Length: 143
Image 1 (cartoon, rainbow, N blue to C red):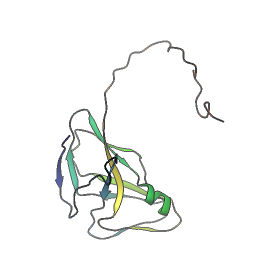
Image 2 (cartoon, helix red, strand yellow):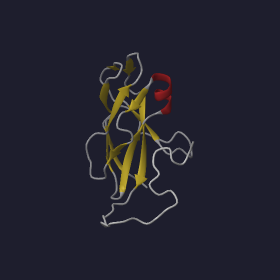
Image 3 (cartoon, rainbow, N blue to C red):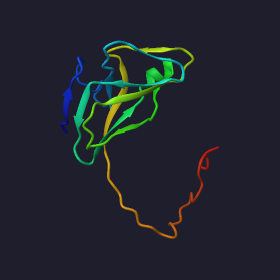
Image 4 (cartoon, rainbow, N blue to C red):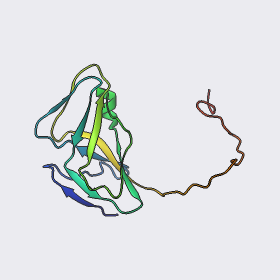
């Protein structure tokens, strides 16, 4: 599937790192470095604008290395880019560490995963079908 993209950044387009990668790394497009203090959040631009086909979304997900090594993650994870959005892709990062973190221009800050979805319609009812699990919720299937 091809997706139209406008690249206003000075960086190459996101690409898959391996043949079976689900996500492509998004890079920060910055005029100057941005410092994210502990427990602070910042919206980071990528310089990318896309036109997704109807029935698809783009999900913004954290990069595992940034989370593990630096405590940096995507705050509204996964973030959703709807098929009718035409603005710049931005990433909302939060610093969960005790140390300031500096985001530099061109740094890989998140992953983008394109996924198909369906819209639903509700059918109101007074009861639901029975299942083995029933209403068992948090922790009900494990120890």
